[in-house]
Length: 207
Ligand SMILES: *[C@@H]1O[C@H](CO)[C@@H](O)[C@H](O)[C@H]1NC(C)=O
Ligand SMILES: *[C@@H]1O[C@H](CO)[C@@H](O)[C@H](O)[C@H]1NC(C)=O
Image 1: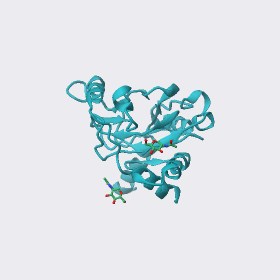
Image 2 (image 1 turned 90 degrees about the vertical axis):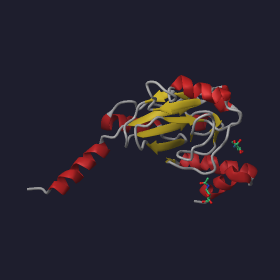
Image 3 (image 1 turned 180 degrees about the vertical axis):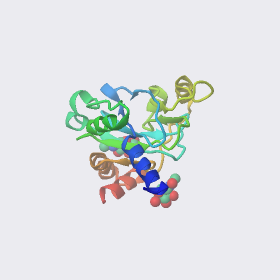
Image 4 (image 1 turned 60 degrees about the vertical axis):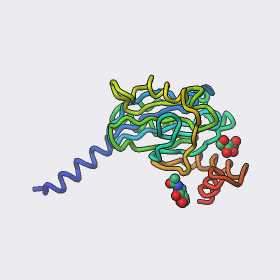
């Protein structure tokens, strides 16, 4: 007879193997937007951000202010080779279960990605901390939007449009950059060599 503990371990393994990965394109067709702008995800699911164009961040927080949970730092994609065909994520990886996860992972090949694991089903607003992208796009999205109350997509958009400042976060947190993204971030450091992002880029580039 297998012990309860080993059954639990098997269940946990099966659950993690089935965790979905969803793909979000950052700046599709050079628009100040995340596509899709809302996703629903379960705790343990992964969200992979694919940087398609320009110089952007994936940063969590309302009204263009970081809350410290999730931040990719600045990733500058400056040519079609970096961006992939049509400047789009190659796949959507939207399916549930293992297959969705596979497609999701496929989407990021050869492209700069930042992948986070969703910790819970609480709403999480995400914005781009570059220049005035957050306010202008508004370049925002929401993971697990609420049906009502403050954390709906329209409210997250309004709060962004009204924000006085667009504030970058200091450190990469809450997720993993792939090698391509680390490479591109290291270029920020070469370009500037000072300031928070330059320092961070240097740190990552040195790894
Ligand atoms: C960012 O990282 C540096 C170096 O690890 C640390 O000293 C600093 O406190 C961090 N800042 C934030 C806001 O977490
Ligand atoms: C990307 O944007 C950041 C913040 O504005 C800047 O520090 C960095 O130099 C930019 N990177 C490139 C390669 O242009």
